[in-house]
Length: 191
Image (cartoon, rainbow, N blue to C red; front, side):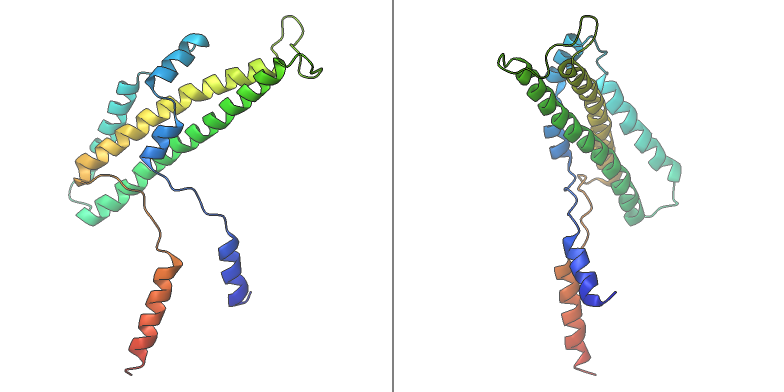
């Protein structure tokens, strides 16, 4: 593979969505929505605070277990990655939940259209496709809510461990490597 084809292959690679606790919070249901969903679909509402505190404590306990084994930089990098995994999980669950809610709404609104012959109610004793979609979205709402609680706990622990707010790792861009190449070429002129 030539350098040119490698470069164009890298350019065509789709960018992964930026991970942030703010995005996870926007995508996942809040306490009110989760409680409404749990009530409407007869689901158990997870204890957000307990999940949050348990994950906060687990990460802090892991940090303490390292003792003197990790220096400050290694500790920050290690826990940045761990917290990033929690946040990515919550954000992914929130995104999937949001998509399924939109799908459930679409299927339900199609059923309300009287001039439509497709997607009518299921036979007695069976759920319709729209009902299954609503139930699936409800299950995902509870899961996303619980995963957000875990992410919130991990982010809170990161602040305690490092003394800094958690920020997602951002890989250096190609522009930086171009700058480095340029600097190396300029310094090479002095040889």
